[in-house]
Each structure stands twice: as C-alpha cells, then as structure tokens.
Length: 112
Image (tube, rainbow, N blue to C red):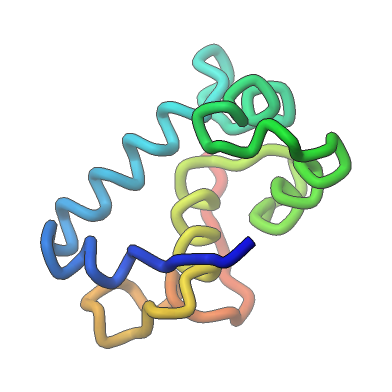
C-alpha cells in the first residue's frame, strides 16, 4: 500500500485554521462520543470509514499506542492531531503550525 500525503496541499488550500478544523472533524468521527476519546472500540467500529476494515486488532492497538502520549490507552483530540502531523512526511515547521506538532521529539501534553 502506497501512502499519499495530502496534508501539505490541504493546508495550502484551507489555511492553518481550516486544516485544524478538518482534523478536529476527523477526530469527532472516530471518537467514542461518551468518552470524548478515540478508544480501541471506537477505532475498530469506524475502520470502515477509514478504508481499514482489514486491519487486525493488534494493528489497531499499535495505531493507538503510537499516538497515546499520556498512557491511558486512548487518543485525546490533542494526541490525535499531534499523531497526524508526525505521520505526515510533507509537513515541517514552515507550515505555520506549532513546532511540537511537526517534530518527533517528546511533547508534554496537558491532561484535563
């Protein structure tokens, strides 16, 4: 499977604020409405939306672990956005986005 990175062109078309709004919308589609987080269960339920219905449970767990910065086993909206930026090879600090969202360095994420 070849990965096509559309994030840089999306930022160019939508602007930073518009792009962030789209990421938040994506998070909302995948999250568990009651918990306000992307959980294993909500991700598994929504894999069809992502075209990832063939992924095994262990692969879904790995996806969550990749972005789970606070170790709670789920992704907050902030963790989701950070993960999306880290996975985009075409993004860099010149996009006008916070450096922490485009670097692979450890980031402190405030927990509500």
